[in-house]
Length: 190
Image (tube, rainbow, N blue to C red; front, side):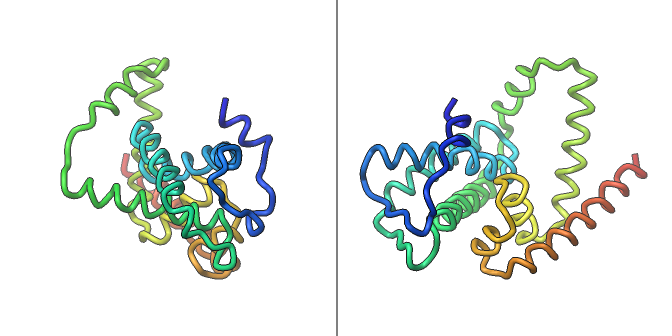
């Protein structure tokens, strides 16, 4: 429900947005950005439950740090996605310290309505893509997650990662070419 409203109520121009403790404005921010932040995190983390938790953490951090936002430095969206990126990076750092089997992933797989054959095919495709993404550099994976996970435009990605818009386009083109070759190589090895 919230995700649908986020699409129909975009925020005014982000540069002009003054973040205040006003409850109505915070609700608008949440509704406008929840789906994009969640998709970005889901694309990078590949775990629905962890993605929900991390998305909540992003909005908690945004509330706690809203006084540090300055519109003259960067647009609000860039600031918010920087918080999301740092939250995901913190998550990966903590995961390196403690590796464990995720019961949530098992529950999620069991709750799917698909049949075993369909689930196996989906999982295999997902595994191929995950392995292909691992060949990318961290910066490349980050740009891919912003483009396809968060659905950002190249100009928005350029502002977030502090490179030119044309450089983003070139990186995405090269990355897609790499991924295609890697997926084809995986298919040949199967």
